Image (cartoon, rainbow, N blue to C red):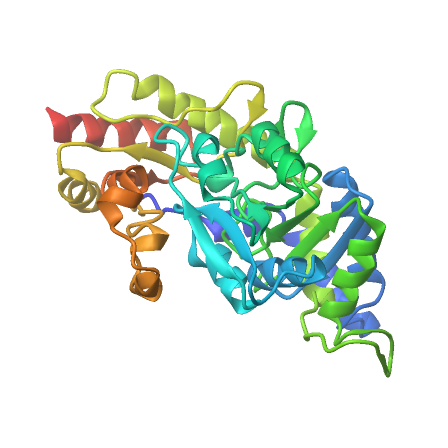
Length: 369
């Protein structure tokens, strides 16, 4: 049996008629940049996130950069974020001229450790970016309380958490502003790069949209210098089709995750943990493999036709890109550093079948036996 890590073709085949029709409509209307398809998706996705405003942009990294700029964050400022994420999170901070300040992770959820944020706050701190990593909501209430105490802004990095819930609230609607990626492999993925910013703040919405569109609201009336970051009509139409299926796909991911959990109950791996009163959406299904055997397990699964991944093999502060910060990996970020050597992502997508999960778990059991 061969099991891919993600099966985008299988998903496309299941909605081919809808997707092909949506693309044809955009081409037929020549609505390539802006226009009704982008506007329609923005309304739909904003409603999905329970936010008043949605601004479609070129990708998730742009979304973060634009959100930071909309909050007037730049040179001389500091922004706190998690030590375990994709580099886009921290990269966006430094692209504004601000300094990234990393916080170690909770070893069970792999999200930012809320008990370690306060010690990183200084007079220069302007914002916190919690990452809802792997589709598991970060613990937002303590973060919001810290933000209130220190007059900080909260930017949700929701690139992997489309449709997740935290204590009854939709991810994306909790902080001051939130950023999504629609990279093809995401739970809600385009057929190219795409992203979005959502917020309930009217002024932030206007400013973010202005920054994303060359600093203007009218064609040649440039009030500030912005960037060119736009969601195109074809991607918007594709995303709108997929959005109609997202709740169903999310439930399939959750069923698959719980089936993995059940079958792996007695295995020598640690399965994902959801914090209380949350609904995770399992963008990734990440287990933890101890005793320095992750690579051998990965090789064993590959030999049996099972694709896996590691998200992420190097904790952000330990990357060469951040050597200038002078961190000591084991002293400063022990949990993120340790996790980076033990985490393993197993195949996870809505179309994954029970028989495939049973095969994967069987091969994991074979390895440990």
